[in-house]
Length: 84
Image (cartoon, rainbow, N blue to C red; front, top):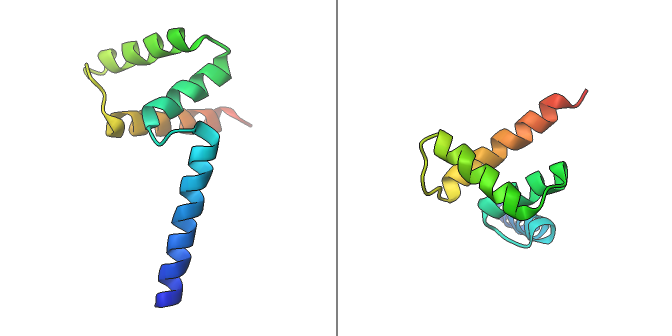
């Protein structure tokens, strides 16, 4: 049981390190902003406005980390579905 706990902790640490290495942040709102900017080649200010508008259309005036995480997962899932 202890071996599984150590393995789980190591995997969790590796995932956290990989996330921080890619995004330099643990904030999912930053993740979606960086991914959209990279995909579309738009300035980050434009991407921020687009994200805020999308949240407003969903009725979310002030998105929190959970809202951004769900939006990021939707964005990633749509990107994976679009690839052949």
